[in-house]
Image 1 (spheres, rainbow, N blue to C red):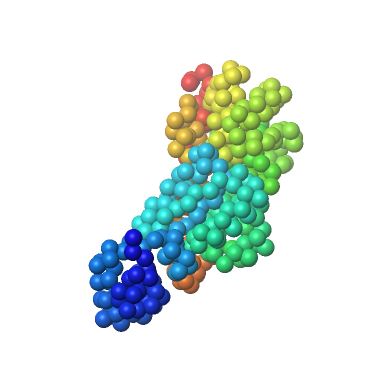
Image 2: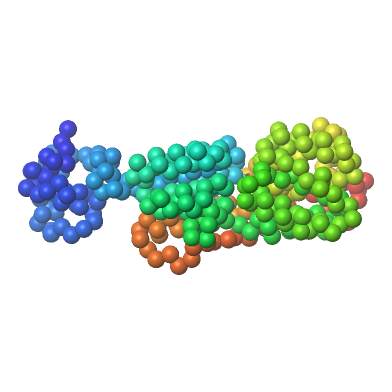
Length: 334
Ligand code: RIB
């Protein structure tokens, strides 16, 4: 099999010149280009992508590091990223970090050794000092890392407030919150939005907030305990849709009717919301747009374009399902 050296010898040029022709970067005069192209054709040379990336320090590859691809939010965001990247002839490497900083650091180092051209990461543990050492363009998605690192996310605090405001608007008199894991920045922000809306209510007590840990089964367990302790809860704001499914399961196991006895609202707007019974009302993130914007931002950084704006924060919006009661419709009318 011919190598890049064979092509260089046949065209009577240096390996670096062949690399410039292959990567279409740097100046090569027309006659030289023609000789190299003819040599490639004559020797039937197929560039070795690894060798090429070693030489050019570019691999036309980007990495996406997410906590857990099993959580339905992340495949939807990954789809948008891959759509744009593949249209620009980039390939995507997917990594699961499990929210563990040691895995995130391991992947950052591994991607550097593979000469990936850029990284999009969803993290609540990495700090700027971990990123500053990396000379690879990095975009923080869904959660911010620092003011100096470009990011794409939503206004989680305002989204949490709006979720509770909506439950109040349909007549809920005692509202609980199933929060995501502590230390995950957007779970904390959604919790703060809930607290901002309920802290002055006479019915509020701290034990109306329980941690579903972004998991369905954990949420089912803690929600059952909550509803058995507070049988007068008539509204629940779940910090993501995955946990809202756990709330629906808990209500079903306790014989509690949704939405007649209990209104439930989630957060994310994943496609799963249309598959639950009843369909889930949620505060929907523009998931595809989030991923697409993060990919556009990363491409601008890879191509060395000036970055006009470092941080993009989108708003969530109410997506009505059947898990919340309709204002003015009494239970027995259902
Ligand atoms: O469901 C996964 C959660 O983690 C989503 O709310 C998303 O915002 C991510 O942070």
